Length: 241
Length: 266
Image (cartoon, rainbow over all chains, first blue to last red; front, side, top):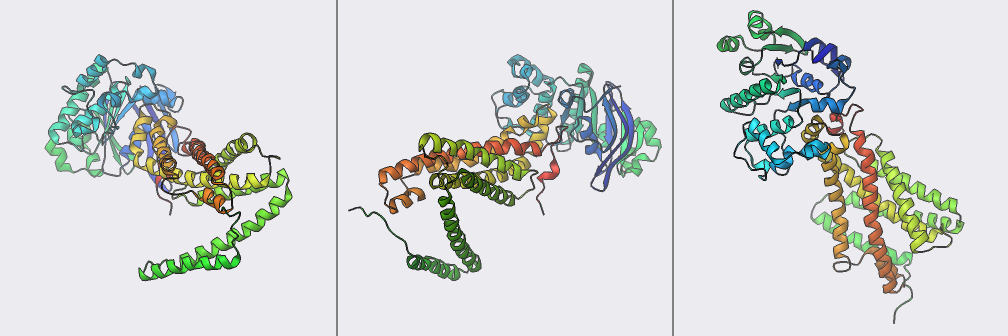
């Protein structure tokens, strides 16, 4: 077991963003967290690397309280945001940005950087190229390579392909699936696009109004009304199955 | 022949009101709607500076270190309050940050000037300590208030960048380092530009005042050079101290960015 959530609640002012979350995630799983807009998906994802803390309840990472060493946790739990963040500077500077505080990363050799770029399917790219000149898809891959240089055990995906066309989205998700197997990563992906997610995730957590209303594999949950209750159209589910 | 002194009487000062009258005429003609604000500003300038003149005369007569320190402390407290008032966003403990920054700049820079540069005797002579201290505090206030606003703007603009760096394992200080650098850069550039053009484009106020009061221009220039260096150091030092305190206010003990502080205060 890599993550455990026990009676986790998140309140912001008087709003109940997340309520009564109880679940575990095992090493190597690919878990999709889906739900309609405002269901609390992104807030939940932020809790996995302590960018947000619960108002109540306990979260453990590898059996230890998530707050016990937050910097170490964040190195182990990489995140890929919806809009890739690319910093001013070259591809190399972007990849090695964690070298500002991590001497191992600052000492990364060029051939290791190129290997990381190959891993995410970024070939024919110059390390001296200005990172902000890359296309949206390339920037997302660059952000993924930067996260992988930290050698994380868990990869969090926050709607990572929502701004990409469907072909590119599939390519990036295929790449992530290959990496998951190669590097034995645990992947937790938040998405409103359950059709894309069901191609990769063996397990889905369905959120509605901050509560888990379904947790299991897609086939089992398709038979329940969880997708409809979460505000996801039934015909979409049928089309995809 | 160089005059010894130009004495400005109250009557002379009344004549200078013609400037304001002329400005009012122009403002009315352009329909800028600033008439009331200008009149209040004119009155406040007169009342505040006149009162200050009497207060200074009183303090100058005291010749006691405790009076001098008390006046400087009052000036720092007022400047810290004013700097806090100027913030567009709520920054927790900003008054304290300003107070510490201005007090540190005053102690170090004013102390150096009084003890080692001007060699004032006694060191607490209000004739030197109060006007120079006032310049340090005033300049520090303007610079830090602007830098803090700019810093919050940078945090808003870079919110996702900062969270990305935190997510990669950065400490809060390293996550906001670029934002701090950009804010200090923006604060120091006007000071450097002033150093580049001083004497070429305009004669600075202190120097002009000294020359009008009959001081030899060579001496007045030396004072001005010292003041320019002092201003720059004040801005650098006060901004760095202020930001070192302020950036911490934007993070929780769990190294999370307090995103709610980046929303404009109502």
